[in-house]
Structures are given as structure tokens and as C-alpha cells.
Image (cartoon, rainbow, N blue to C red; front, side):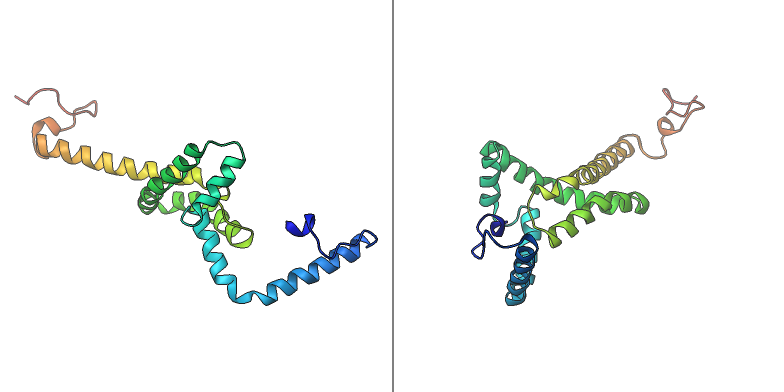
Length: 174
């Protein structure tokens, strides 16, 4: 982006097509001179998208876009809490559903690697992350409730037997 604003080789008399060719050549020269940095840069981009690298810079950018500093930090911390829960939920999600929910996540990964990293890039994956986290929480709560009922009632007790309406018996059998 800086080359658009501050192009040291800018010549007002230069034809647009000539300028584009020169800037493309300069870009490829820069890339060739910095190939050894690609793995580090890609890792930093992914870490930045996951709010694991340069958080202060990200918050500074958010504040510059009229967001309160506390809200930017709250977003980072809430992602840190939600992400591991979502990973567990993704494991517990059925394969077909998981595949559909992972599409936005994969788009974010590709965008991060190809273009740049930042938590605003992650926003298109966040609905999937929330759904995966909800699956995990449902699994934990559902499993805990089922375990509690079995412990209190006993799995073979008459109270747990289904009735014709499908619910457990309200009273003991005769």
C-alpha cells in the first residue's frame, strides 16, 4: 500500500502502463530478495489472525477505527477462551456438519496466508467457531445431566422407564 502513496520512482510524466510494469518488477525483485523470510512471515500472519502475535498493534489499529481499547482487548480474550472450546466442539461434530462449518475457517486460513493476517480477517469464521463452541458446551452439559440422572435414579429404576407418552413414569409401578 505504501507504494501507492509514496512511490520513490514516481514520475508524473510516466505512462500508467509503464508505472504498473515498473512497480510489478520492483515487487518481484523485493519478493526474490526476501524469499527466506516467507515461512516466518506466514507464521506471523496466522498468529496475528489468532491474536497470538502483535496484539498491541492490533488493538492500536482497532482504537484508530473508533473502537474502545477495552472492547478490543475483550474481543481478543474472548476469542482465546472460545477457540479451544470450539476445537473440542469441532471434534464432537458429525463429519458432514463439520465439513460445512469448516468452509469459512479454511477461507480465513487461505486469505491469511495469501493476503495478510489480522483478527478482522477471522470474522467470517467466527460464526462457525461459535457453533463449534456451542456443540462442545452442549456435549458437556448434556453428558453431565444424563450422568446426574443416572446416578440419582439408577439406570434400571422404574422411574427411568419410558411410558406410552415417551416420558419417564411419574409414579412407581404397582
